Amino acid sequence: MPAYSLAAWALEHLAAPVDVDCTTTVMLKILDGKCKMGPYDKDVIPLLYDATRHLPGKLLDDAAHALIERARAGERESLVSEIYEHRVLAETAISRPVMKAYKARLRAAGVLSG
Image 1 (cartoon, rainbow, N blue to C red):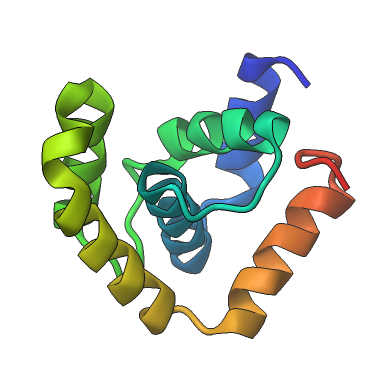
Image 2: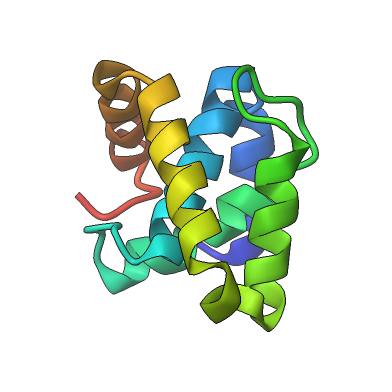
């Protein structure tokens, strides 16, 4: 799916606060090096994140987005422990069944490889 289509899909299907939190959490996992997704999926998540990061989440706040922005701007190595802490807190705040359902929806829609 082209990037513009992914962004449009994300805005239509991932606008709920819990979906914004799930997308943000996966971004933190990617930056922390703990994400077990394949390369294609790791390329897709940032596109979904970019399309939805301006939307309000339910559990995660602007600090997570600011951290992600700093890491993507080249500060990743100096932020290792901070990224780790945010990722662990995010994963604790979002239940496993919620995260599994989120990823299953992405796979069912053909957004992630299955």
